[in-house]
Amino acid sequence: MRWAQGWFQVSRKHLASGWRSPNLGLQQKLGLTFLLAWREAYQWVALQAVPIVAFLAWRAGGVLRLDWLVPAFLLATLVTLSVGPGQALFAYRLAVPELRARRRWFAVYLVVATLAYTEWKNLVGRVAQLKDLSGERQWTVTPRPADRGPAAPGPPR
Picture 1 (spheres, one colour):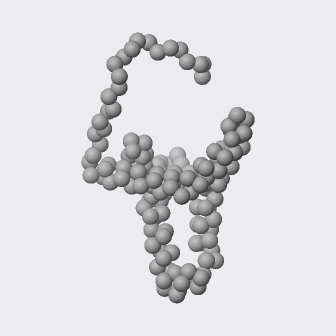
Picture 2 (tube, one colour):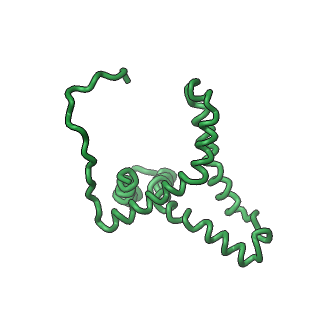
Picture 3 (cartoon, helix red, strand yellow):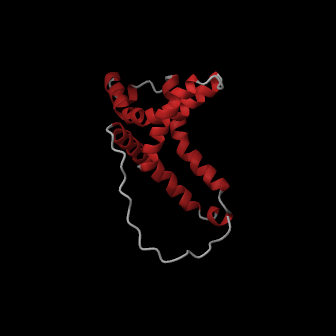
């Protein structure tokens, strides 16, 4: 939640100044808009996908009568549906051999991410935006055990 709220604050703070910047070209400003504004708006837009498709199917007389080949709809669907498999594929390809040997983990991730994680992440983002807009910016720090002395040195990074 802190991460999502922090990104929302960053987006609100820097988007307008980025567009006013004389040092950024149009392509950079469009990229900035995608990275900051669209990532915040998407959480609300994605929420509307199922009701919109349901309405269009109802209006067309059923799901089978729906024109699924509308170019914008088709492109948006392909991009959206390719993100999860793309992430799983890149994670698998870039994983160390010990992890790559566990193909099932990547398959489970793909299923969980597709069915639940994306909406969970969007829900957290929407709640973070509402909390920030309502002025709720205080965090309760989770208590930690008393200090037990210096930590043992870990492996070098």
